Amino acid sequence: MAGLLGRQELDARVEFRGFAFQESDESVVPVPFPDDFQWGVFLQAHVRRFDLFSAGHTHTAAVTARVWDSRPDIDTDAGDWDEQAEIDYESVTGDVAVWGSGRSEDLIRLGRPGMWRVRVTCAGRAEAEAVTRSEGTAYGLERYTIDFWPTVL
Image (cartoon, rainbow, N blue to C red; front, top):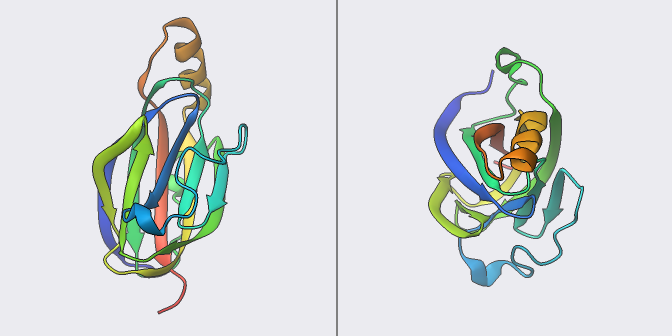
C-alpha cells in the first residue's frame, strides 16, 4: 500500500483554458509554458513540464497535489471523475512550479529530484464551462487531484 508523503492545496489560475506544472528551475525546461500548448488535450506531457486543458476559459481551478512513496490506488472516495490520465515527468530539483497567467508563488515539493509518474484526475468540468460562459469567471468549480510517485528509487 502506498504511503502519503505530502499533500498541498493550491489554486491554479487558468487562462485561455490552459495551465501547467513545470520544473521550478526554468533554465532546464526546453519549451516553457505556454509554448507548444495543445488545444483540447486534457493532459499533455513535455520535457520537465505537463499541461492541462481546462473546460473553463478563465477561472481559478482548485488543485490538490499529493506525493506518494509508490503508486497509489485511484481515489474512489472522491466520486466520479470527468477526466483521468497519466504521464511520466522528470524533475531535476524536486520542486514543481504552477503556471497559468504567469508563474504562481506556489511550489509542489516532491522531496527529491528524479523520474515520477503523474496521475491527474478532474471533476466539475461542465460546471466550470457553464459558469465561465455565462458569468465570465469561476472559482474552485473545476477540481484537480494530481498524484506524484517515483518511478525509479
